[in-house]
Length: 263
Ligand SMILES: C[S@@+](CC[C@H](N)C(=O)[O-])C[C@H]1O[C@@H](n2cnc3c(N)ncnc32)[C@H](O)[C@@H]1O
Image (cartoon, rainbow, N blue to C red):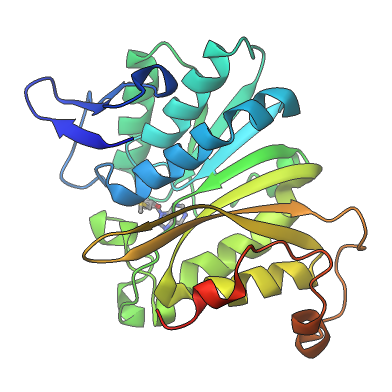
């Protein structure tokens, strides 16, 4: 399936099997807000690929950190509603106040409701949401940049990821472990420069299995959408032991180790 930005209709449209894909109109784009791009599309494609699983999963609370224009959370809500999954609560956060406003407009234009909070990751929400989130989706600022560019409140916050693009990702990983429900699923966009294998190993130390849902290479970047879920076999919060972890593949379900090398 391919996607294109239809300037005439100001809409993101899908070609190919269009019945599989929500059509999200960009109702309130703003130069200070990240416009959906290959990474956003890859994340929504991962959710579409997971559609049957997500419908069966019956999530009660779905959340996005860093919602930008609202393209991803709106797509998720429309996709689940189209499959008869009503009564799901949606939440999204963004550091950028304008992004929070644009997300509200995108949701409203598509008849979808979500609670939008302008905050740093999930600051102020953690007590309320601890262990509550069934589905977490994140397309983080992942581009390697100078440290001083991280955390500003404008458009640069969309991509500025500091060293190896991991400054914000690593903070998000800690919060997500706190917020995910015991059965929760976490979808994360990463760039090869972020060392996704290391991210998977770090999460495994915390008791999470992982696999690649979507892999996509463009001229500029190589993206992966990873899915994490808590292993049934391993207790959470294990002590760190990377040497053992890398030799024990019994609950680490990345399909191809060699895949990560040489990129
Ligand atoms: C790559 S954009 C993704 C936007 C949207 N989810 C999409 O896929 O099109 C990353 C988003 O994360 C937001 N962001 C960056 N740092 C953040 C933080 N510490 N807390 C919350 N949101 C943050 C940015 O403002 C931006 O909207």
